[in-house]
Amino acid sequence: MNTQTRLVEVRQKVLKQNDVVARALRQRFQEAGVRVVSLVSSPGAGKTAFLERVLTTLAGRKRVAALVGDLATDNDAQRLARSGAPVRQITTGTVCHLEAQMVLDALEGWDLASLDLLFLENVGNLVCPASYDLGEALRLVLFSVTEGEDKPLKYPTIFNTADVAVITKMDLATAVEFDREAAHRNIQSVRPGIQIIEVSSKSGHGMEECLSILA
Image (cartoon, rainbow, N blue to C red; front, side, top):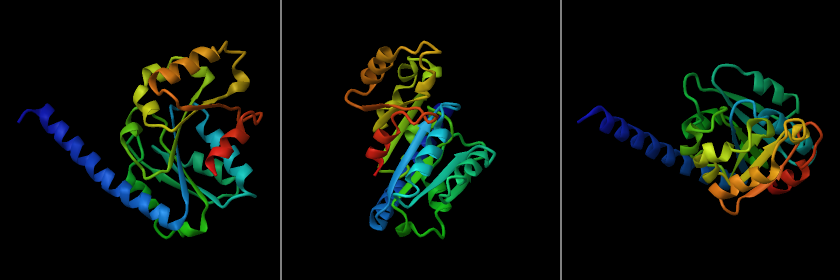
């Protein structure tokens, strides 16, 4: 057996096991009555700022919490905790994505029935997370106006596995000469019919539209 064949078999086994755990998680979430939303993006796309705004806004409306994935630090978890929502950190080490088992382990001792919404903030990466189901009900893929309109064309798989595309940092769109029509066209070319929402976590633009699909 050559090395390439062995790597493929190992990867298939890992993904199969992840799917088993993800299915169990999804059933557990449904039974507890908690809606789970995952967020994926590249580093620096504004994912944490977006989630902080969401958690802070929903604090008086819904029982919300978050699990945050990061390679090494708990900086994002500390930042999100300012919203007053329960937040737990998942440190992935050298793993560039969250896996279903990591989510399962992080939920130990957590009363899911006490929550309405649970957010999973994945590690900043648009490649690896595409293959890993986390048992979520809704997946949002975020990319910012500063990253370029061709982001969906470069990373089509993550857009194909997402339910909603969120374009962030719209307050900077004019300054960076963001081509809105090109961005929408590129998103639709790789994921026809996907809902697209433009937001600014700084100004609040588009946030209510986002919140309306989360509840």
